Image 1 (cartoon, rainbow over the protein chains, first blue to last red):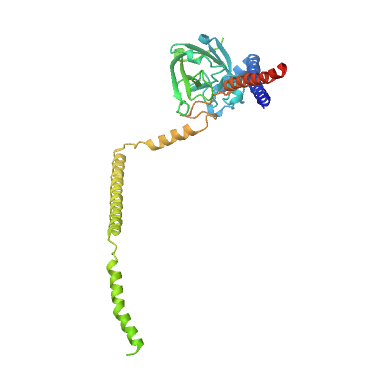
Image 2: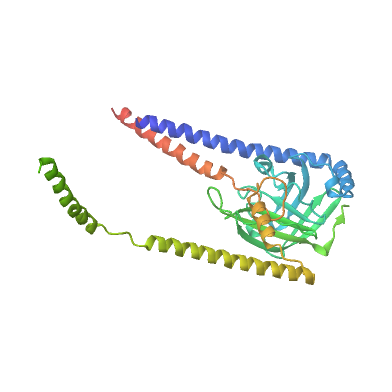
Amino acid sequence: MRRAVGLALYVGGGLMLSFAVGRYGVGVVRADEARAAWNDAEAQEAVALARSVALPRDRREPLVDGAPVARLVIPKLDFDAIVLEGVDGDDLNAGPGHLPGSAFPGEPGNAIISAHRDRHFNHLDALEVGDTLFTESGARRNAWVVVSTRVLDKNAPALFHMKDATLTLTTCWPIRYLGPAPDRLIVTAKPIGGRSTPRA
Amino acid sequence: MSLRCLLVLALVASLPGTAAAQFTTFIPPQTKVADSVKAAVATQQKVQQDSIAQAQLTNMKTWVDSAAGVTPPTTADSVANAIAATNSADTGAFRNGMRAPETASDLPLLVVIGIAALGLGTLLLGGSRAPRTRA
């Protein structure tokens, strides 16, 4: 009996670990693919997105779920990742996700980027008001300054339309927590200088 | 007199007594229920009248506001919209007032449970093997 229980725990634990490690592995591979796609198609995508930016938002072609849409750099956290379109489980497993329907970084409106607290945004709590971030999306490169950090209940209304360019980063809170986290960390940033600059 | 006559007389003499005894123990129902029903009906009517009066006053205020060119606030609508947005899915497209996306991950919990189960299983398996080697 004791041997049977031990064997069941051994096998069950092994399966859980294999699943978790496999999921992390798939995320790393997809993140690498996204970065390669971003680097390869940078020029074309920059042109395409620059053209689409000139159109009204409701007339643009919707982006494919999982497509690389931006690059997010946070020097303080030594963070550099490619942002994918979508915030479902597979997208967030591979990288930070851009919430569909929200603005792209640098456009007028609220650009919302979310990521898991145990992976890409595992040090987001270290960001403070005044810290700087950088984004690249299409032909735009933006520098941002953090203007607020808030912790909200996970069911609280947290994301709102903005007229001005705004960058909102979200992840779960507390960062170090086992199981479904009860709160959300919302970091809001505004563009430095109030406008975006074309990439060199 | 015949026996039948005597029996009829006895019945006539005894029945009113029995009936009287029964009726004396009868307690007629008091009018409390009826009174309470009346009171309840009266209260309800009063409340209805009050609410009607209040509605009339509200309508009057709305009418005065509209006549003065003041747009009435749409608080109820905005609250309902906010609740609807809050209850909406948090993995769909962006909506004003929506919740933050679901970024909770079960993988760290799975890793911890997996390591614990693996360790415990190894201990149990090792412990069950030890007596055999001794024997």
